[in-house]
Image 1 (cartoon, rainbow, N blue to C red):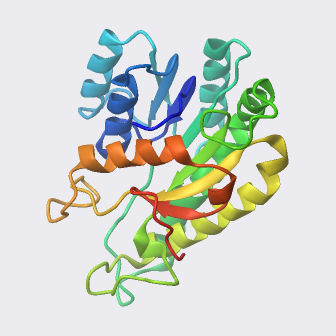
Image 2 (tube, rainbow, N blue to C red):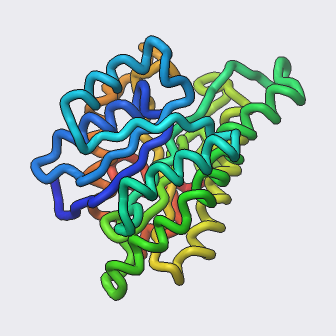
Length: 256
């Protein structure tokens, strides 16, 4: 892995797929973060068990119940993280939680579009707002070091399917509501980058590839371990040059 060390990391949607693998690989680093916060909606579901097992082995892992569309739940999670961090702030927030229900131009409904937008776009907006004071605190502690994920950063997990500049065909990726919500997430990322740059917070979006997860299905070509390994490498190298941009798991720009 290239340079970069994260004192504290929070990952939403951490009970499965890319989120769970991010938690595993952060904990497995030679110099793991002092704090890894893993959030999930259901702290009692079957998929939660692996996360709980990890927590029993790593005292630095804190599991937070967080529903990304419920502001009260988000505020409670932020308060709990603040207590654990004891003034040190949060260095890295990864907005990973998302849904991808089937939807074509023929089948999509108003309810489909709004519910997916609520989770995939509004959710990251609300989570980032709630954790912003902790991100600002972390950035202030490393004032003068430039923009980086080891200082303070918001990373929104996006997709190549959101690209306007180079979109995959509808035959390959026929999920209209998901694609639209992630395109909106890209613009949210750009707005966050413009707004939070002066606070020392880097904001970028990342396309993890077509990954073998519940969302990506077993038809995908990229193993989740490979995707996440690449993502963490990229996080270590992000700087002001990538602020407000979309990159993929290998660091290549995505023409969103």
